[in-house]
Image (cartoon, rainbow, N blue to C red; front, top):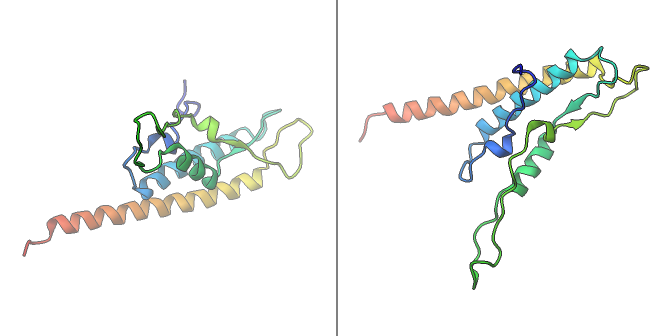
Length: 148
C-alpha cells in the first residue's frame, strides 16, 4: 500500500489523555488535511471521484467528546464510568466537500477551490511548525540558562 493511500491515525486518537500540546496537535491536523487536499487535486480528472475535506472545528468537537470528563465523586465505582471512543481513521474524519457545480462525469473536485485550500492549509501548517519551533527554542533557552 502506498503512503498516500495508507490511513493516517487521526488527531483525536493520537492525543494521550494528558496531552495538552495544541501546537503538535495542530501540526498533525494540518499535515493530515494537506494529504487529503493533495488527493483531491490528484484525482481532479478521475470520473465519479468525490472530493473530501476535514473540518478543524468538527475534529475539535470530536476530540472533546472522546475525552472523559473530570472525575466526579460517586458512591459506587460503576456510577458514571467514562468511556473512551475507539480510535478512528482519517477517512472517518473526512467529509465529502460540497461542490459549487457538478461535473458531467460525476467528479466533485473544484480544482481552483482545492488549490486555494492547499495554499491556505500550507500557510497554517508553516505557522504550526513555527509555533512548535518557538516552544522548542524556549525549552532550550530555559535549560541552558544559568541557575541562580
